[in-house]
Length: 55
Image (tube, rainbow, N blue to C red; front, side):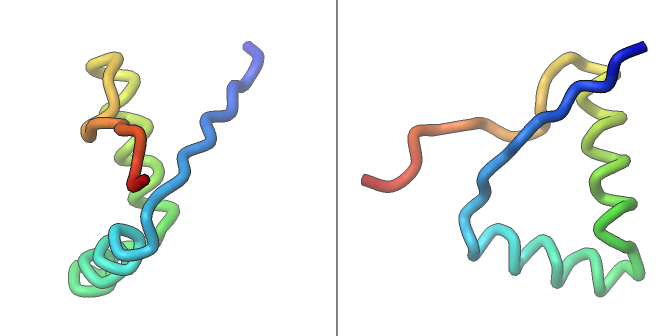
């Protein structure tokens, strides 16, 4: 099975908020990535919307 890579660019504020939430719940970034991937595999969708960003 060939692995696929998904690149996601996130806003700095979102990243900092996510890091704080992970730290509060004693989770590593690897755990968050695994949960995100599991959700994607299960539903076929990312658990957030992808927009055009700020202009």
